[in-house]
Each structure stands twice: as structure tokens, then as C-alpha cells.
Image 1 (cartoon, helix red, strand yellow):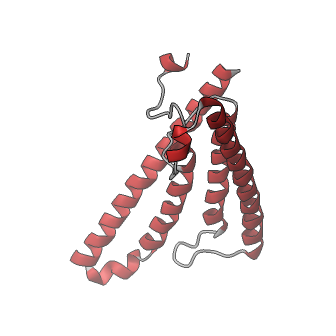
Image 2: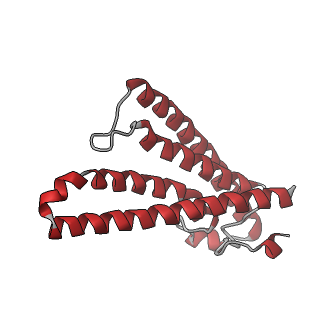
Image 3: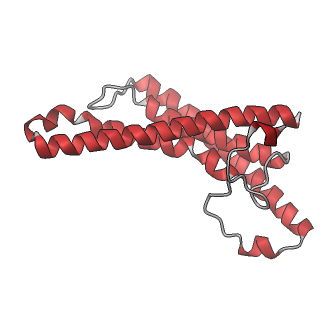
Length: 177
């Protein structure tokens, strides 16, 4: 069972990393192009007003897609001074409480995200310059919190342990097997 979970997680991780890297590269290219147009050909800058909106939308997606990756690597902001000094059993109990709270909170926020997406879909609201349906902006947190809940769940069953052995690099096929 653990092997199957590890292979699924490896696939999810690869997709997340690809998307986050791609989004960041696209944002850099768009911002660079936008600055060049404003400095070299200012008369055309209004034509590319959509770039600012597009990069803000992409930034939201990058942040929420990276939530799970950051958690499994132990990169979320945390105060661990007390946790690191505790004996093994109390440390395990606190980690269990942290992960349980994390999964409950993430699932609740994902549920709220679904409700928000449904509401925004019903309004038919579109973005001002891109003309994209605005619900796409609210799908990102929903997916991000689902991915975060997945990572907390995997912590609960022991597939990853960010408190003792955070995953710093993606495991190779040999390391997973």
C-alpha cells in the first residue's frame, strides 16, 4: 500500500513542480515583455494591459499549487523550538495533533472554496482585461487546500515525516522502491 501511495505522490509531486516552475517562467517572461514594451514602445503599452492581470492570476495559482510541496519539505512557517526539545512520545502526540488539525482545517477551507467557486460561477463574473471567468481565480485555493490536506493525510499515515525527516529533494525511482 505504501508503495502505491509513494508512486501516486511522486506523480502528483512531478505535476505540481512542473506547473509551479512553468507558471513562474511564464510570469517572468510576461513581466519582462511588459516592461520592455512600456520602456521602448510606450504607445503600445495599453494594448498589453492584460499582462498585469494575467500575472496576478498566475501568482495566485503558483502559491496555492506550492502549498503541498512546501509542507512535505517542512518549509512552512513553524515555531519548532519546543517541539524539537520534547521526548519522542510527547513529540509524536503533538505532531499527530498538528497533522490532524491541519487536515481538518485544509478540508474545511477546500469545502469553502468549492462553495465560493459555485457562487462566483453563478454570478457569471469575468475578469476586466482577460475576460476569463472569475471562478478560475477561486479554483486555485480549492485545489491548493486539497493538495495540502493530502499531504497532512500522508503525514498521519507515516508516508512522510516533515518534523523528523523532511523530504528535501524528490525521491528517485530507486529510492521509492
